[in-house]
Length: 267
Image (tube, rainbow, N blue to C red; front, side, top):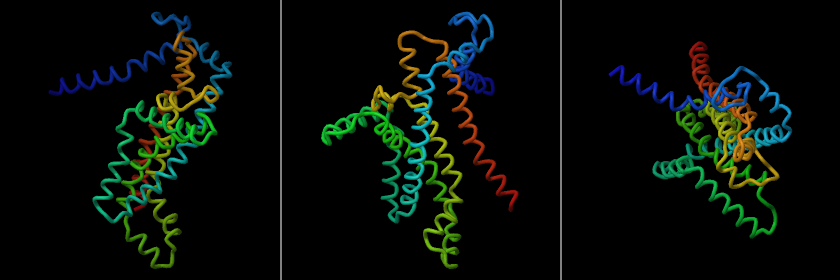
């Protein structure tokens, strides 16, 4: 049984990470060959540094990811607070189920539905076009369920006696929220923020349907560059994106345990 379990885990890791390892390895290939690794070189990274269009797409991706994750975190935290404060058990369960639906939907369904909504709204209003604003709304909407999923459990495990004690001592509900509740649920807020940033940064499908040629993100730029002829500078760009996302995921995984250790030491 141990052999089978280890063999199964090895197969899973190979299927998941072998393509990524090959991509990273060939981003340093000197010859630019897809079959032979002739030597270590960083010339594809140097070529990437001279690509102004790629850096423009990077700037757009970072701007979109930061704004959408911040908006989604603010709205999602307030939504999680509202769901937690609902009195009806069944209504609360229905709302939680509804908020989980976008996470189960295929990205292409979400992208097409948002595109139809934006196109219909633009035609009815007679102004506007697909671009940065529509992408910002789409990414914020896409990130919301993940923020709620990260923050809501923190509200549910919050010790309500602390809030009641603070209000008995003269704190207003608003001050109690910012001084007691927000610090208590901060790990969930930070996790939701980083998760939203990561999801927005590497999103392609939804962006493909709600974007315009005037505003291009990194995933769209990589797709356009590799649709006809593969450039090895795109391998370098993909490697950089993988490293950034991996670093963010590691931060998410270490935030919770470190905070728990600090609390245990403080006690």
